[in-house]
Length: 432
Image 1: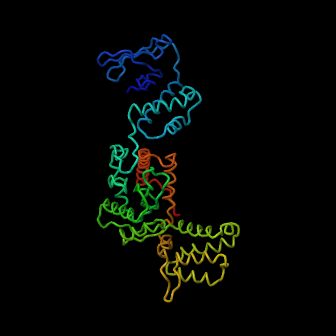
Image 2: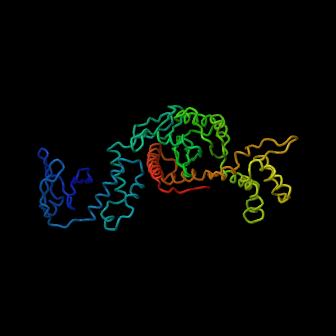
Image 3: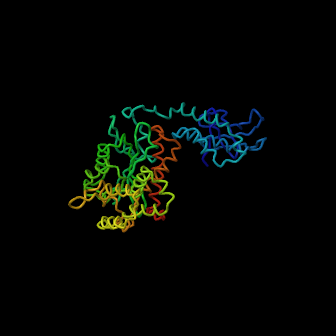
């Protein structure tokens, strides 16, 4: 049986054997003599001799009982020290994780919270765990551990280099292959989780059997069209086939990304998120002082909801359906401003011949085909992943090293989910 050790407060090893702890007495070649940790205080004569990490003989006749609570507390402290050395989690987070579910007897044997936090800081100083936190994007130099997954696979697949508009793309070879096989991509950005050196984390999810899987994690310095173009070009370079293009990509209605997708994936159908369509309409309701009326008058709410409902009409029937609604004179004068906005932005104003092009093409925000094919009509799964990742970080705008450590943990969980999905475990299906 392999020997088990725990560390003392001074970092020395204690032997855990048959529910008791022993400290090192002396060593002769490969033979180590251990004595009970209470040999001085309680004159305990119990001894153990180990050779090459195996017990060769023992006298485990103690003059005191084993302190199970203290032994468990020692193991907890050992785990805390390991987490301090191997993760970038905050001391508060490490303590909260280690103390979850502890019994009162074990908790009473632990040092105070402040002393535990001091131990964590001391371990990190001694092991020189965390690299210096860079002040500018150009200063980031990656130690190897921040470029690979927890399994040792390459994780930082693209770094544009020490420039002001630096882009970092994290993924794996398997993720890229899954992305190439996915006909439908779902993409969105989030802001609170990013290190202060960057503006947003932009993630791209593939879909397999109605399950959205995060496959690309990109740190971006801004929201410009050029940055999005650079991102999409690098993703295309990573894909195994030169002409690989998804059938559809869903994003919000950010013009810079719309233009970038049109340039880099000209054959791909670009769909807008239905939730963002509704959000845009409601924002206009608020801006025009109609929020109170919308929330308190069911008739007003039902009437205005006819506008986003047009997303579920076949694309070729959207304009006739809109005109039919308008001809029914159901919009009061105060609501006409919302109708005008909707027509300008999503339908197109009438002109001498037909209509002007809207700001966003009908085919982009229409959901009819997505519903027909059982595809999500929103990016809610992507935004849900963003919220879950933010909760894992426990704080907004972590430093670059803590962010990457959390991303590596998320990728490990993601790999487990992929394996379970491939093995046939039933997924949670979202059709939102």
